[in-house]
Image 1 (cartoon, rainbow, N blue to C red):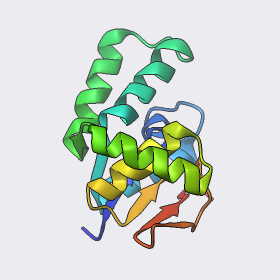
Image 2: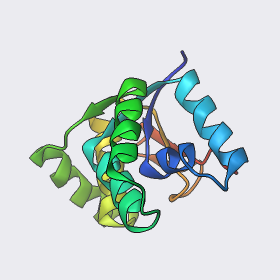
Image 3: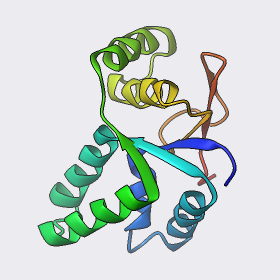
Length: 135
């Protein structure tokens, strides 16, 4: 394994996408090549799309959550992370929820955040680089 990376919910969604074969393979490769970390927020966002947009059965979603938890260290958000997200939101102007991902990645010692939603290559706080693995 190489470096410690934080996985955003959109990477998980591509793992289970039926119509994005190339992105699914890229997401699978990323999870196999890195020490992966994520947060309960990413799992919540994943479940929201699976239930509202994809209408997947609950047992299928539960199996996916189990698989994600086997591939990643999953952490919960703390009040300190939420406060850091507010600070990052003020500084970088990403949505608050994206800033929660950034703050969690920083708090959990990640040096990269894999996401398709933010600016590829941007360095946050001199410590965390956003990487879009789908470009």
